[in-house]
Amino acid sequence: MALTATVHRLNITLSDVDRSVYESLELRVARHPSESARYFWQRTLAYCLCYEEGIAFSKGGLSDSEEPPVSIHDPTGVRLAWIDVGAPSADRLHRASKSTRRVALFSATELSLLQREAASRKIHDVENIEVWLLDASFLDALEKKLEKTLALELVRNSGTLYVTLPGGNVVESAITETRFSA
Image 1 (cartoon, rainbow, N blue to C red):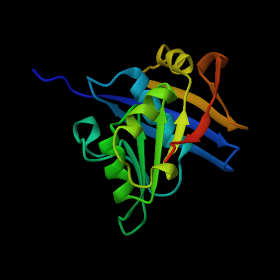
Image 2: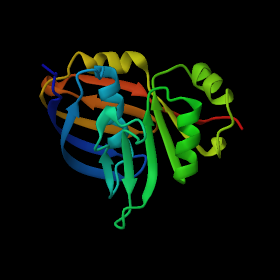
Image 3: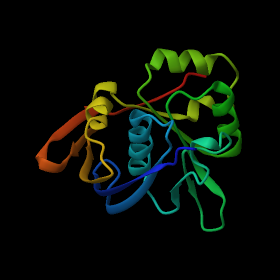
Image 4: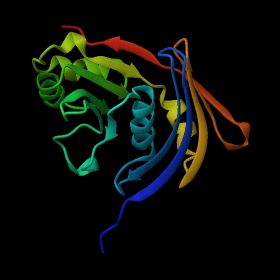
């Protein structure tokens, strides 16, 4: 019998002071049985931190290797942003950069490993790929709190993420933006 996805209901109060975005998000996020909680959190944080009109999780989920985990489309369906998670291959980043003007990557992988992979092959417009580095221990702390229904507050201010969980527990981490070298 095949395992099915677990649907998590997340009520997120988003205060992205760095971008002046303030929203109440009611998300239903499907978690594939093979998806780690760390990847789930990276994907969810990427959605929140890039939130704007037209943003969506991939319809195909993890099984569709040709689509990003999160993307932004204009009202006509044209993809405006490819938002990836983890440590994608140089080929995937090249394909993303060729197909979409804006590419962002959210990762807890060491920058040196990401740089090495990016240098392994020519990537179109590599210097314009946004790389957002998350602290692995921050994701580990969130992983322990993942439930099927969860209400939380997410604040980004001056390059620091604060997540307030039920019971008032606050987990915080720096989030660093960098770019790949050409």
